[in-house]
Figure 1 (cartoon, rainbow, N blue to C red):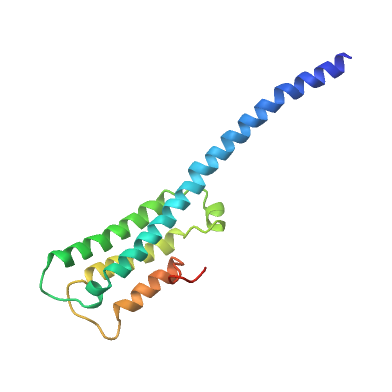
Figure 2 (figure 1 turned 90 degrees about the vertical axis):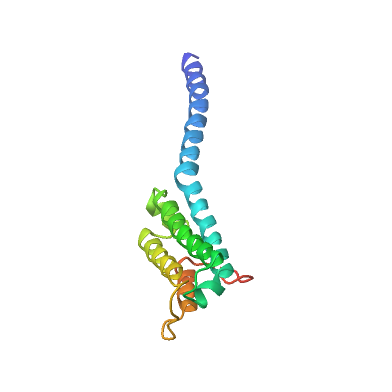
Length: 151
C-alpha cells in the first residue's frame, strides 16, 4: 500500500517535470536550429529576388554613374552581408545541415559571387565570363530552384 502510494506520487511528480523538460528542449531547438534556418532560407528568397530584379544592371555594365545602378550595387552587396550574417547565426551544424542549411564555405562563395556581381554593375562586360553564369552558379550553390519548379 505504501509502495503503491509512493509509485503514484513519483509518477505525479515526474509527469510535470518531463513536460517542462520537453518544453525547454523544444524551445532550444526552435531558437538555435529552426529559426536561424528559417532566416537563412528567407535571405535565399531575397537573393533570388535581387538577382532577378537587378539582372539588367549587372548584365549590362556601364561606366556612367546613375542612382539606379548605385542602388543595384548596394542591394547586391547588402544581400551578400545578409547571407553571411544569417549563416553565422546558425548553431548545431550537423543537425542544421541535415535540415537543409547551407554550410559556411558555400555561403562564403555565394557571398563572393554577389559582391562580384555588385562590382560588375559599373565596368566592362566580359564575354568569356557573363554575369548570368555567376547568377546561375549562385542559385545552384544556394539550391534556389527556378520559379515554378519544385526542389
